[in-house]
Amino acid sequence: MASPEYEPQQSGTPTGRSDGDLRRRRALADAAAGIGPEESGRIKRFRCVIYLCGAPQANIVGPRIDCVEYAEAFGWEITEVIEERAGLLPPQGRDGLGRAVRWVRRGEAGAVLTACRSMISAVPGEYDELASEIEKAGGFLHVAGAPRAER
Image (cartoon, rainbow, N blue to C red):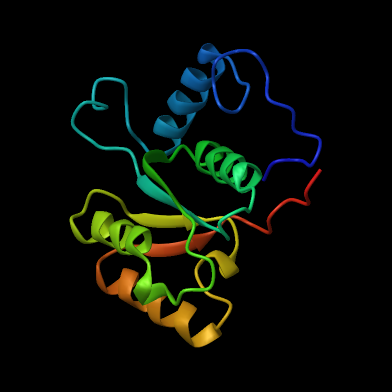
């Protein structure tokens, strides 16, 4: 998880890491997963969809950075980042959340990653229902952590 002191660097990567550092991290993740350099073309890395939701005027840059850093720390490939400004709509009424679930259904992602539970639903039953739907599709719903405080 990102520290509250996170400041973007000028290196061109969203996390401020150099390209060489990102390649090294990917190579380490591949090695930990048992994927050799010659096999990397045949075996796909674990993929996730990042889903973020907030009120129309909410700043969700911090949670996005947290999710990207979280995925990179585990060597996950990010297939899509979906940002939605749906406010208090239930999960079934959000187009972006439906798109995230479809990524899992099609086998193009193994997880939906979000910054906090409330971005899915503040109602435990609705959250559990969506988590179950994603699991039936062959993936899982994962919360990276609590959103960072506004600066």
